Amino acid sequence: MDCILRYSYEFIKGFVYNRGVRGFEISLDEVLGKAESILKDIPLCDRCLGRMFARLGFGFSNRDRGLAIKRILVMLFYEAILRGDTSRLEEFKSIASNIGSEALESYRRLFNSTFEAPQCFICRGLIDKFIDDVSFRGLKLLMHYGVRRFLVGVRVDKNILEAEENLVLKYNLKYSESIKREIKREIGKSIQAKSSLTVDFINPEAVLIVEFPSSNIELTIASIIVKGRYWKTGRLISQAYWPTIGGPKYYSIEEALHSITKLMGAESIVIHAAGREDVDARMLGSGRPLILEVKAPRNRNVDFRVLEESVRSNSNGLIEISLEDYTRRELIRVYKEESKIKTKVYKTLILVEDAIGDNDIKLLEETFKNSTILQKTPLRVLHRRKEVTRKRKVHEIKCKAVTRNLIECLIKTSGGLYIKELVTGDQGRTKPSITEILNKNAKCIELDVVSVEAP
Image 1 (cartoon, helix red, strand yellow):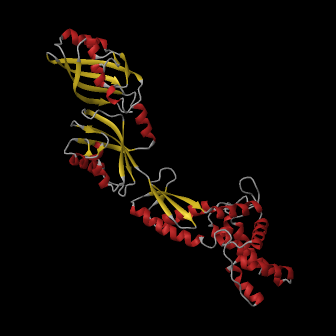
Image 2 (image 1 turned 120 degrees about the horizontal axis):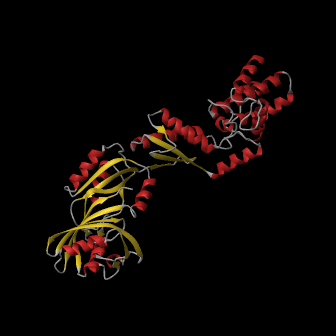
Image 3 (image 1 turned 90 degrees about the vertical axis):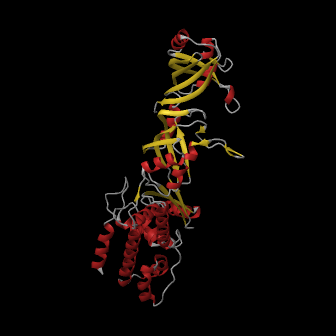
């Protein structure tokens, strides 16, 4: 018996060592003493007992810890009883059922009877089956969505959490861990062991939320976020879907991108662009920077070139995109903010009421060289936007005559300047304007965006 005890003590010492844990010391006798006190009070399964000592040592599961502690306790009781300690005999009789199956054979030999072990005070005897069941179902769900990197989140019934917390406080168990932490770790390990999936704490493709003890599972699929650019080679095309009672008012870039939604088995796609052009303006030249957010895709591994070709084909060439690389959600905010200040270049065809000559063109180019424009919210959008006066910059204008009263201009500006109103003056709400400088009514009849500086 002494040999067995010494061997068992050495096993326990593998995870309890007197150098202490994070600033406090713990001895083997203290671990066994606390465990015995707990089990005299309440029944605990192997996992829940082991979890009370989870931070002692490495390379053991909580089930290993709990099982080892229970075996040592039974052996210590039995050794004392063999020495004739009748007090330990009575103590063992009262504690045996709370220890559970590890005490059953010794109890039978000592008392010629058996007992029925009560449910674990914390997990109600459910935790092992829960981990196995949820790991299996969770893996199937992750595989269905083609996820490679995942994270586990856990919700635990508040009554269970309170019971555990009260136990930890009552016995001053400084080296315990929570049931939430154990479930999260064990499910993650189980899924990894049965597949090629990996737990990723930084950038998971999905978060598996499990509820204990209900076994409910929720899966939150991370969006795929890709940066790129788009071109719009036709007019009367909106950026966003524009619904009306009779159907969409205009064909849209969102509609053209619906082919990506289907190819990737996604719930939807959201466009986060660096600004937007008018419905009747084309987006040419360098294209407009955008971030494409593909929500809850089932297929995460489609080649970018396949997606680009699907958009081109779906739109009959009116919309083209170039997808450059995966990116982080944080860049969306950068695109939104910096689009207000980044430089843009427009090509516009302007119809002037009277004939325009070389001196008029020279006047326009000189006046708008590094000029500041004060612009009230245009009348055409005032019904849906707050009236403000914004200060914007025109870096330069280069113009050439097409006919006696038609000119083509390249206009380089800061972001957020309304070009049509720069031309017309918008009844004096934009100053200065081309109409004001020429002292002739001018109107933008065609507008193209030819360059958008990337954030």
